[in-house]
Image (cartoon, rainbow, N blue to C red):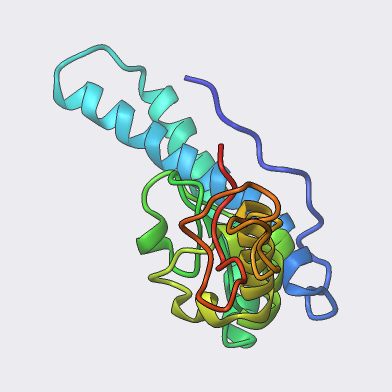
Length: 191
């Protein structure tokens, strides 16, 4: 079993000047290394429990690596707690952006470039892919409303809301969309 090496980071440096996105971009690889080390230790312990051959030095090395990874990660955890946390966005396996890891599910990952942003800025950037449970206000967000209006405009027939010619829409000729006042009602393009 091989270990995923954590990035070389000078853990004596002061973290207080770094932005949340910078902290998370350094911290995430450490989280991944810790998670891998936990799985490795668990694997070796299960092998031992099942009576399968495992060298004690392999298990000891895995535990030592896990201890080191957890120590490295504690520095970032302490900074996170000192700042009373910051907003994070998780990319879920469903391709949606989530505000909570529990909603994002297993296999989700933090998007460090969105770390520390308030909800409004997050929604400006990812409104199309935002989870409706995590971000219920997304449907009223100006960026989402504008994008939705643009999407609908692309689907709408260009003759909508215009004066109808010869009893039909001036663009598509449909007669069932003409109002009593002689204008074409809003309708979709014909495929």
